[in-house]
Image (cartoon, rainbow over all chains, first blue to last red; front, side, top):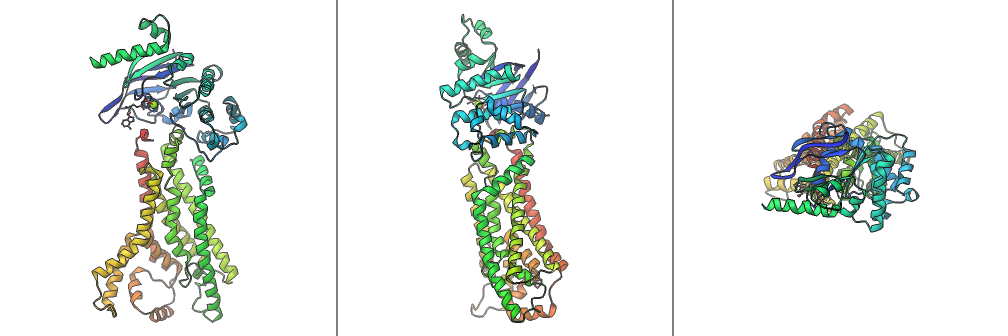
Length: 249
Length: 323
Ligand SMILES: Nc1ncnc2c1ncn2[C@@H]1O[C@H](COP(=O)(O)OP(=O)(O)OP(=O)(O)O)[C@@H](O)[C@H]1O
Ligand SMILES: [Mg+2]
């Protein structure tokens, strides 16, 4: 089996506090991988370590065959990252924002690619408008375009639906669902909207307080906790409560 | 890094604050040059040609009779220029949420800080060059004075010294933009520092001088008292970048200026004496002036390098998560 992400006992400490504890993740090529957990579980911290933006305290990771600590540039040129509160240059147009990201990736002759990506996210008609005039939904789609412009093999999407209305959420999720099929991009999707992750994710990992509680397809996890019907929300609750009991004991 | 420099340059040259501060500096130095060129014309007509030999053109930039000669303008507003170009370099991107996006592209962190610093320097270098050329042609047409090659060489070195001086403030501003989370705090800190060094320190030097060597009879200060006060003043000026810049620029643009070592003599000797002295000794050559201002210049270079390295280190050591 080919893994796009593999971690071994990945750990991050801030001072005396351990926020990611011995994480062993395996993400397969071509899948949408739901990365779940309550606030403060350590999801963003893990993604930063996978990108080489934060150094692990111990353990290691491999991302698309590279070690993020030793080869951060190789990882960052192949992985698209949508940060949880991403921003734009409001005084530039959508197209200029996207061009800047393309330039930072040292892409050349990206004219056509720019148009394709803007078309994919449905912003081609408004590409000449200043981003400061964009709605939240348009911004998130532009963020997705910025992630895709570099032709990534893998993308990390940290709460891409934050603050969107139901329609906006559906649009983004439909786009995400198309990524593995049409562009061959694997996806790690962090979100709190379980019913939506349930719709698009092939497999999920549940994190709490830096520890991995479960990893697998929703059906597998449901079976493991004795649920007759696979339902991510119930699976999540079961694991979450069990971890709470463990902590109390 | 090229992409970053290009974007930052475009930002600088199109920003309102750049235009405002440019307008301020250009207006004041044009006013100064205008008055100076009038004065030069009159002096030339009155037969002062011999006295102004080899420095008529430079007087455009320094003439003390003028309201605000370029040197004074740059000493005061150059810092503001550097600070304005850099005080929000990092913290604005942080609060906009664009910093983590940039850093997740395949570039080194160094490139972000280097790119911003060099873009600022290029902006300053181009603006200064434009200012010198504009003022120069103004004098050429207005007063009809043609620069000698030596005067041009002096101006070229002056351009570089000014670049280093403003570069010091730019580096400092970028440090502020890394250390202070809030753009407003950073702007306030920069403004406070500017006022402190540009306005307060010279006054402090004089006050300190008077405190250390008080004049017994304020009506008739003695030579020793004045000399000692001036010495304290000089020492204080040496720890201020503005003081250093003033000294270096003064020596460079005025062949008769013999620098700080002699300044206190000049300060106490009468104006007539000074003019006589200069008349007999003649001006310094270009290389003599450069050698004379070298210590001040080197301290400025060191200070500018120090602020840049500080910016570089604080940024590359910062925990990414706080980004
Ligand atoms: N620089 C830091 N210093 C100390 N602790 C930190 C630092 N950054 C993050 N933490 C802590 O690490 C823990 C994990 O944070 P993280 O942002 O990874 O969680 P998350 O799963 O992404 O949460 P959310 O769903 O709210 O985004 C939190 O308890 C947070 O307080
Ligand atoms: Mg998070």
